[in-house]
Length: 180
Ligand code: IMP
Ligand code: MG
Image (cartoon, rainbow, N blue to C red; front, side):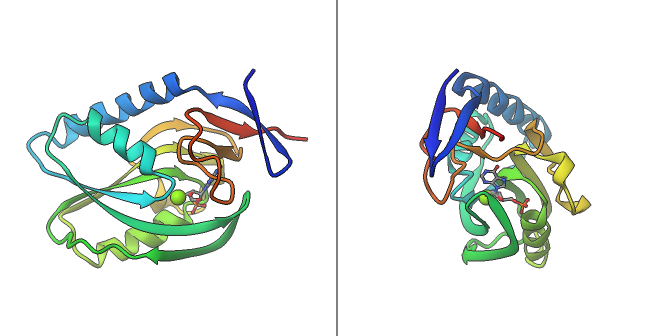
């Protein structure tokens, strides 16, 4: 088994790069079907979703554009319960078909807050695509992603965009914190 160490903690390989590629293809196929003939704007939630965004976008056979926002809620391996829009969304999304591209929906506080914020800008439609989700941790029903690559149990993961204090994003696979 592949294992990496960050900040004195051990993480075991959990989803291989090959498996991630398949999850991304599945999400892309669903979006391509639902948005045929449309030109959605993908809102990439930085920095976690940047890897998912670029792979997803290349897998989409439809016309689409991209814009970014930076939202932060985590410190180390824990959610702070607050969401900071540290780099605000600049693009005009009025009357656009918006797909928020997120790395993971955990408690849902980030998506709950951000969707409210986006609705005020009056998009034509608003959906969320998340590579992973932790359904057991969801506290906000409206934050449930419309497209999900894979549902995972309560685990802290790193790699493929997921960070621990900004490191480990560049690992090609996803690794999960070893418990105990
Ligand atoms: P939520 O607001 O509780 O749903 O958490 C969502 C945000 O927390 C995500 O956008 C991630 O950036 C971060 N996050 C949640 N779980 C993990 C994890 O297991 N590893 C790394 N980041 C995570
Ligand atoms: Mg995030």
